Image (cartoon, rainbow, N blue to C red; front, side, top):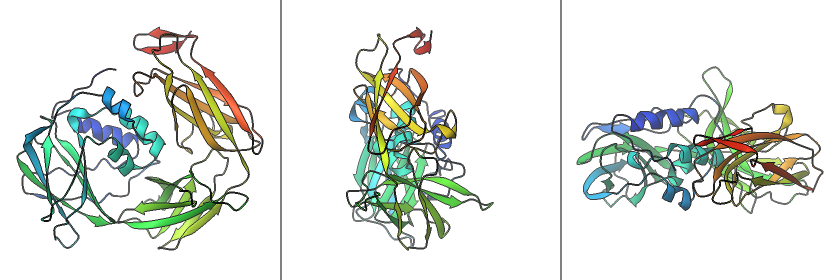
Length: 367
């Protein structure tokens, strides 16, 4: 894998561009020593990309770095009244360990900002009784710090080298609960739901807030402070018109899915791959065009990907972005192919092959 090393000047502007690409807030606060930073996640603009989670293998293959326990950043978590918050979970992403490709792939599968950052974390800790925690640094470049305590959340970007203090004020989030059932009335497990909210012009925009329904069919979406009281939650499924429900205040919502089919995708990598193809696959309604933001991506592992729910009876399309399984976050090529309609209850099989592609530098291109 191509190794990426960043200096203090280039690392976080680059993170900012990556997060902006994902329609995540790029307005990350920076602080001088002992200066307060207030950062409850603002409502971002634009439509969120599909998002996901990095594996241990992906992190092991990324940039190599080491933490220095002798050089620390002291972070203090404060509640809305300014009191210290003990026992808060602290997640850190060090700039020295930034693997931008893996971050993008993760985000396209999770659809959720905080989950993406947490899964790519390079250090985790918890605040002490006085609300502080000492974070070991990794040389220059700084870090991104997220703090969570129940419904309280805050984050900030630190650009120094350590030996300083940073206060992060937490703000309350509210939890939106949505229940999803299958057409036979049983709980629908594994359905991704994303929150949409009105922008300044009153147009609904997707937020990088996504949750997956559990075995009881319920999803718990944590909406940041400042979001409008009226929200819409949409299912991120391969459908012409995915189910959606309007949410007002703390009232729970519910939706029912129509009878659906599913897809199994077999991906044949390039002959030069050292292992089975990895990467991500995204399936969406062909009526969306050649590309779509309606659905989340699913991981390709061992040359296979499973999409458990797709609308039956309509043409679909799949885009596969592949990597050698040895370096799963280094995307080498992508291919978009049409998918015939599947019947209700049917598991459609799709085969996507890259064996006729040719190497051009580090990438693959069609012959």
